Image (cartoon, rainbow, N blue to C red; front, side, top):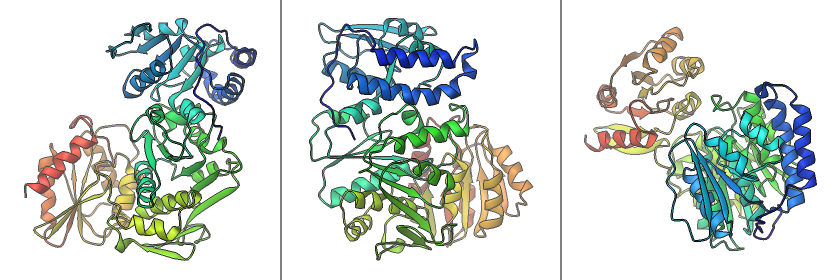
Length: 506
């Protein structure tokens, strides 16, 4: 990965010849009045555009610099620009903007409300916050006219002095894997910090950075979409589909994920799941010489990998880790543990030391978190499971009879596979309590799959929880909703906190 000095910010420059040339390519590729039909090909061109600009500019930003989106990430970008001496800043957000204290000599223009994108006309460079779609018509035109767009992750990867950077992406398990990597490194005495989509914004990691540190980034498709530089160690977990209300297609979503590995150097390393076809395809785009594969004995690869999972046992380099020796619950966590261990192996950590560290690792809150046993009933809080495949994974290792709390806000997810697996492949599932806007549709899907156990709809989580207690002594209650929380709760954390209190009050 390129290690460059702190960016030098020029206050009055014009876009480079290469930048203008690249934007001319945008114009030739988009001679249609309907920009939306040109956007898919523009995603590919954007990749080439960024490479040319960054190589030519040597990571400099040209002011005035716009900040597009002023949430947590945008405010971090503002702090970064001020720290580095940028004097002309344009803040753009559809929502009302509350600026922090502006230092003397810094000029800030705020554009908010419906016409917030009008601020683009005052910018030469724009730092896009992750949640802002980069190929909107307005941004498309901005770049065609010579404007340059970058992101927090792009800037961090260009400017970090960290010894190594590890990036983790996937549809599920990113946060857990990132925290496992950090836990292993900490136990092994390696200085490390977490940032990106989990932890602090990436540019905050540049504060007080030391050359002996390993930076670990959780990266979403939003953050990866226009990336043109990759981390030293890339970890690609299972990739299915998500955020199709944001991405234009499954292909665009997966293509964004591939940017994690696409720009790796030969001396980098790529860790991936061999039995997940989309993940393996993404990993195949990595130029890294070192590739570590996680393989399932009962999967298509039949255990042909660098890390082998058989039942509840993980084997790497002859070393074995038994799930029964760990604090985490759920066989699906072995994939995350395998990926975390291989990432640390790429950083020089011995497998035996990584396994020993993982034995003391505790699950992140609301991720199949064991909340204890009351009156002979075990309780698991999986409020973070906002997708059907997360609930499929969470219920896979249940050996006791269990009651499942499902449902939440409506995002038009397909519950067919979840229903079929719950009905046909979860023999210990004894009752279901449904809540939220999706309750009726989920019940209908379960019935179509041949549901034979008790399933009822309740207006509140409290009532669903009370019903689930009928599982009785020797059973388990799992809240793994397979849906987002909006409508009943502010977010998955609040939902999880309510569940925790219900257990504590028994």
